[in-house]
Length: 341
Image 1 (cartoon, rainbow, N blue to C red):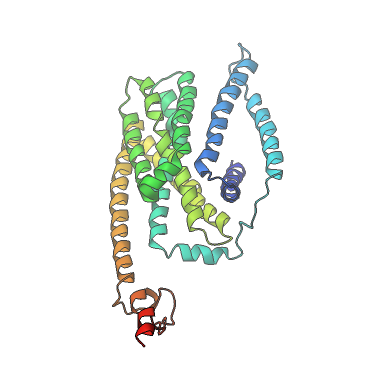
Image 2 (cartoon, rainbow, N blue to C red; image 1 turned 60 degrees about the vertical axis):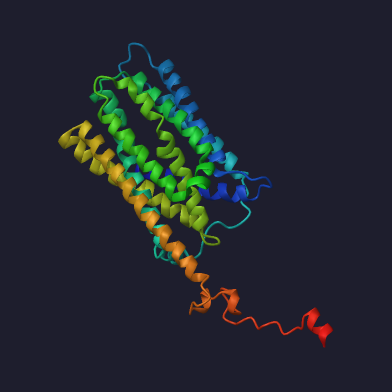
């Protein structure tokens, strides 16, 4: 499991880096989400087809499900993915030779730190979701296996449109607004889980929130990492945020959620994480709005002619931002002056 998870995370990281590089080569604008949505469609198709094959290969008198079709299908599909990847040709080196320096520089940036905290919090919510959702459906809600399969399908129904339209959302409300939206969706989703009681089939409606919870969030995270990456450091940045989300956040969420689940029960676990996600959404929105106001003040100072710093001086007093040498005044006489002379 450890080796498999490490390989899974690495493939996602490198795959996102290559995807952004290939998108940049296109003449027409192409969004990351419009490409990534095919992964969602593949997930849904594989879940349905493999589930049908397992049912077909399992003998009626056999008490246990035959999982052989799932493993054989994985081998075939991963081979096809390797063949496809062989023909991908990124246009530039997406790896960095200064990994530690790039990471250190990023963690000195307040905006990146805030986004990383949001990524971690979403990861903890995902950790609880991935680990205990089916356990909750099967044993706490006493639901049939059909509901577990349908919940995965409804996840994809909710995820696909949000993944496809992710660039539209990001352009309208920004990376931080999109992160706040994901945390708020987890709040509604988890509190809804805790209130299902004797109506387990209502969970299918809640599963549509997987769109903003994962589809929109993941596209937002990958796009943000690509935007802040230095030259040649795209893979490093994807790996840093991917590690915070998938390696650290999901692990902590599963561990803490499991402790609450065992001690206080499923409903309390979902409700606790739901309330926590709501509080996190409010705090994240407040902090990022404060950061925006601070950045706007800095921009006003940068265009202030009386600023002392040469880096922020205005072109009105003979210098241009970013240059230490003042621009000399233009002594060339005007047309009126030449005629008067």
